[in-house]
Image 1 (cartoon, chains in turn purple, brown):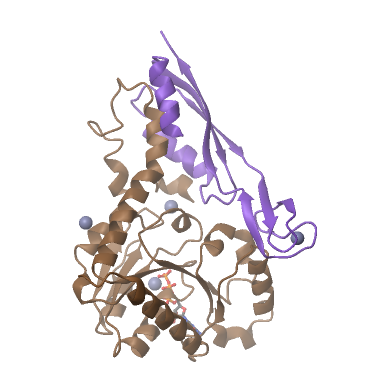
Image 2 (tube, rainbow over the protein chains, first blue to last red):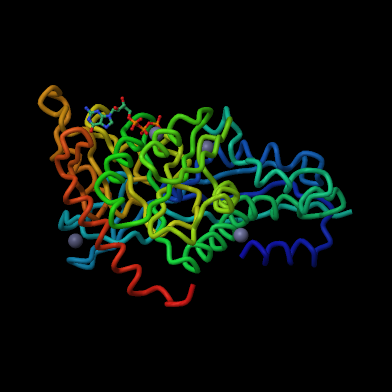
Length: 106
Length: 255
Ligand SMILES: Nc1nc2c(ncn2[C@@H]2O[C@H](COP(=O)(O)OP(=O)(O)OP(=O)(O)O)[C@@H](O)[C@H]2O)c(=O)[nH]1
Ligand SMILES: [Zn+2]
Ligand SMILES: [Zn+2]
Ligand SMILES: [Zn+2]
Ligand SMILES: [Zn+2]
């Protein structure tokens, strides 16, 4: 998917990256501050030097393996909201997705 | 934590941002995207390569993670005492500065490679790869990787291990799983360590820890162990042996 965006950037013949929006699930293991820090170092001397990195937190949702209900949950409380069972599967909340990229052309 | 250490740019990743590196081209229009993608994907690629090394040599690799001082090295010492007659064991030690842990393991007659991470607060797949080339994989059945004491970053970096074990010592508080869900969810086995100290502590209840884990939809074993009194060691050792026999049953016979 990131490669897709690169292809778009290439197709659009962009000269610099203005803004990158990333969606991070609380259970991805990626700490937004870590990513920001790494990004600050990594972009130095590149065309993305002035790019802004925006991280958006994604909701945590679980699917109950007992009653089949899908519900919102918290990162440290992945129980079914309907029947309260702990046997659940994570539907979302562990993702690291590139949501959008703003480019500048000249 | 990583705000201060900048640990994502470890030695193995540094080439990505240095001049002439893959991502340092100023003429590249979309370098930022690549950089972000690669921070983790370069690690994952290397981790897959490490896993190949393990499998080619028929070695089961286990990553031990915990807070600082929760008993990883002492558990390893005790585990080695019990298993070294039957299995050939090796250890890779991650530590910020010292060689102490590796020396403790070597004193047990087992090969140990020390990785001093310096400022980085976790191990990454590149560091493990370097250590692998100093590890006699041919001669081993089981390789333990003692990660740096930290409940945050180690969970984000695949090292190529087959199994994760997360330790929680009774001196730390039974609500740790709720505070660090990622590292506990990643575990194939959670060990509640230093159980011999439970009678002295009135604020750690193993049932609460179990409940906090259950709330993470954690479904793997939880064992109360003490490397001092040997409580729970049988359960831990039996699990290890079961994993070893399962691994040898599925590994290709070639070396
Ligand atoms: N009472 C008791 N003390 C223990 C036990 N396991 C470890 N300790 C003590 O706890 C301290 C830390 O143990 P280590 O094994 O060095 O912990 P570690 O996780 O390897 O520490 P780092 O590598 O620094 O993160 C030492 O003083 C150990 O002797 C145990 O089962 N019972
Ligand atoms: Zn349910
Ligand atoms: Zn240690
Ligand atoms: Zn770190
Ligand atoms: Zn190699």
